[in-house]
Image (tube, rainbow, N blue to C red):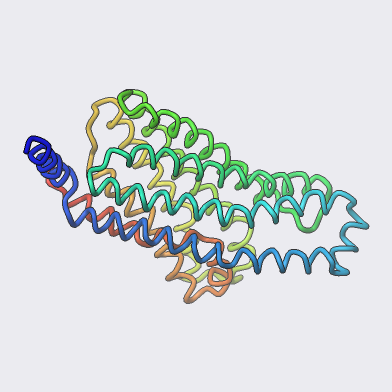
Length: 307
């Protein structure tokens, strides 16, 4: 009877901490992430097959004749990308499991979250070969390399992977609340800043040069979205995390606003892609699963402050 009463109390406390509608929103977001990674994992074998055909093509043979290091730079990149599809899928499965455990008030969710963060850190570390290809390839004047792409991937690795690893380690010691709070406050804004750099460089190096020569309303919207949306989301996240670290309180308005903005970037991108073809051509490189984030952000804004 004592255990039963205790479990009931625990369930009641969880419900107070996380309203049912917020649980549903959390499930929607993590399911979207899982579906996204399944899609790319299914495509991975086709990517490898395409890769083999490229390496055996006359164009690639000519490239290696002009640049002897071409295969050494490009092959690790492509294989790392293919492996990354499956690594990201494992991280998504763990994230989904983590949410289920959290909703059930099972304390194992922290351990699972730690594992998911570590696996996701490995996913971002697999960007290193791509960064090396583009940075070194630029120095060697390879036409397959772009310094902006190289810097974009390098910044994502530096801003996201190391903090994820440190937070993952700290989550293994759940009683060390101060350290966990500190690293959550570091990881969150760096994560958003990493994505801002990713999509800013995408616009500078690809979308803008290949876009319409004449300025249109939608191309202007796309440019403003690429430069500002994730930057503002990053700043809002930084302020929210600063308050969380100093006052040990979560500002629901800042958190909700930041999450809505984060997801809004992808919604705006999708809308712009309807009228600007180059955006549509590169839609596949975006993290389009994040269009579900505004649902979570809006739900957070409705939380009772006493919760």
